[in-house]
Length: 131
Image (cartoon, rainbow, N blue to C red; front, side, top):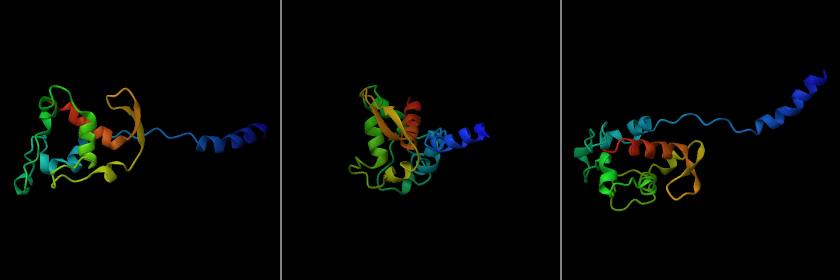
């Protein structure tokens, strides 16, 4: 009986321990939210690319267009919608990708910043497909 009381006494504490975040696939997120415009290979040749007022960017050349460095914060800001610029066709995915767990991520400035796991996963996927 004493063991049962001890176990029951710890149950409220167990509820405070955060669950392990589920694995988020940047490739799957790309397929779900980006491939229609940017294409499966991220070259800007998705099935509706020709119907857009501005051609979608080739996302495999982001690093090349930025002097050999992948601009993680700028990419995440563009996906999020924070830096929309003149690209009216690019959807703002911030609310959609913020649904879910937050993770601490060093985005290149040496500081760990709370970041939506889904947004980070998508940006990391884009980084992984650079030519």
